[in-house]
Each structure stands twice: as structure tokens, then as C-alpha cells.
Image 1 (spheres, rainbow, N blue to C red):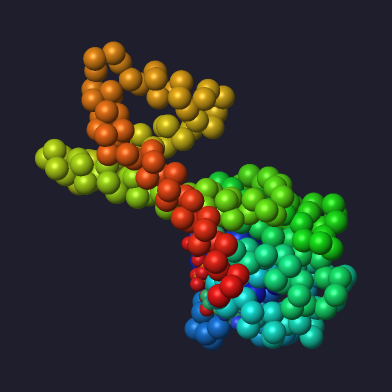
Image 2: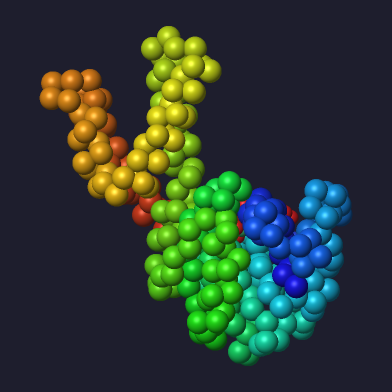
Length: 264
Ligand SMILES: NC(=O)C1=CN([C@@H]2O[C@H](COP(=O)(O)OP(=O)(O)OC[C@H]3O[C@@H](n4cnc5c(N)ncnc54)[C@H](O)[C@@H]3O)[C@@H](O)[C@H]2O)C=CC1
Ligand SMILES: O=C(O)[C@@H]1CCC=N1
């Protein structure tokens, strides 16, 4: 039995993903703070819902999907119902495996995960790290849950906040760029729907080429950038406005915020 504790956006995305991957609803339990939310999850997915304590007592694998700020309270609710023969998987930004281990009985294995919202379309990037009691078997269990909904990679926990800043938040940066490009289309007199179609398809095409061609992004960009042409005129403006430096600083700020989150 797998329990998803705090099935909000990410918890529900993972729930739907593991069901698409072939788990049966009877193998899953979800928890929610509000009864209307629990009813919606039961109705939409056919899974059972329970209190955190009941779900923790029944499940072999507990997936913690609450906000970092709610993690302490959730752990206090479940600590009396978790034993070292279970696996605890945390999806929260910033919360260290040690934070969880300190609040659960000694020896409980914890795997820390940073995934992202493309879980919803089976294109997630999930980055996992073992806590101090997690073994190869526990990492394999976590990979088994996450690999049907996207790519999974292992990193040392010291890099988890950086992974959060890069791939956890990453989709938001691409959406932000798409928004800005569509605005540029509006500025140039393009109808909004047409601008959105052009920008989204360019993003999809670029993403597929990045993933499938094996070429470095610099080479792919150079292939678009003709001498004396249009693209270099745009790149000059991006450089003049310090966009590359802004990206470095933005992602560093996200990493630093992740470091703060475990402190509340
Ligand atoms: N949204 C994103 O793109 C990503 C989020 N994350 C992480 O995933 C976690 C969840 O984020 P979201 O799904 O975006 O937030 P969310 O707010 O949509 O989901 C959290 C859910 O937990 C529920 N909850 C809080 N305390 C509870 C309790 N004691 N018992 C039962 N339910 C409880 C809330 O009512 C809410 O529905 C966070 O820790 C976040 O850092 C990680 C990667 C990406
Ligand atoms: O913004 C956040 O805190 C969460 C973690 C990664 C993406 N969203």
C-alpha cells in the first residue's frame, strides 16, 4: 500500500501518474486537509482517503507531499505510526532527510525527491537522494514509483536545493519566457492566439531537439543565428540587458530560498 499524504498539486499529479503506470486504486490511499478535497480524490481516482495517522499505519511507502511549512506538523501526526520497515519519500523543497529522520522513530528510511509538475504528462524530472537509513533497495523502490512519470536521476543530498532551483522550479522559468515572448508578439501586432501557437510550438520543437539530437545547446543556437541576420539582433539585446546574469542570479536565489525553507 502506498499513501500520499497531502495530495495537493504534486501529490495528485503523482497519484494520477502511478495509476496511469498500472497501479490499482486499491493499492493507494490519499490524505487531504479538507473533506471536499478528499471526496474529489475518491471520485476522480477511485482511491481510498484516510486520516494521516490511518494512512501512515497502513502503508508500506509513505509519500509526503505537503508544503515545507506544513512538514513539521505532518510528521508530528504520523510519528507514532511509522516504523523502520516502511519507506518515507519526501517531495518537499528544502526539507532535508535529517529533518524528517529527527522527527520519526530511529532507523526509518527516507528518500528525498525533487520532482516537477510535468509529472502530469509523464515528462517529470525527478532527482532523488537517500537519507542516512535508505539503502539501494529503497532508492530502487522510489525510482520504480517515479520512472513511469518521467526521468529519474540520483544526486548527493548536498545538491538537492540546487536541483530544486533548476528542475523543480524549472518549468516556471520556461512558462515565464513563453509569456514574455507572447507579449512581444502582441507588441508587434500579432493576434494573441497566433502568437501563443507560434511560441509554444517553437518551445516544443526546441525542447525535442535539445533532448533528442544530442547536440549542445550552443550549437543548436548557432544553427539558428545567421551572420548579419535577425537572431543575432535579438541576442545582442538579451546580452545588453544582462539576461544571462539575471538567470544565474535568479536560480541562485531559488537555491538559497530552498536552504531557508527547512528553518520555516
Ligand atoms: N508545485 C511544484 O511545482 C512543486 C512542488 N514541490 C513540493 O511539493 C510539495 C507540495 O507542493 P504543491 O503540491 O505545489 O502544494 P499544494 O498546496 O498544492 O499541496 C499540498 C497539500 O497538502 C495539504 N496538506 C497540508 N497539510 C496537511 C496535513 N497535515 N494533512 C493532509 N494534507 C495536508 C494541503 O491542503 C494541500 O492540498 C511542496 O513541499 C513543494 O515544495 C516539488 C516540486 C515541484
Ligand atoms: O516554488 C516552490 O517552492 C516549489 C518547489 C519547486 C517548485 N515549486
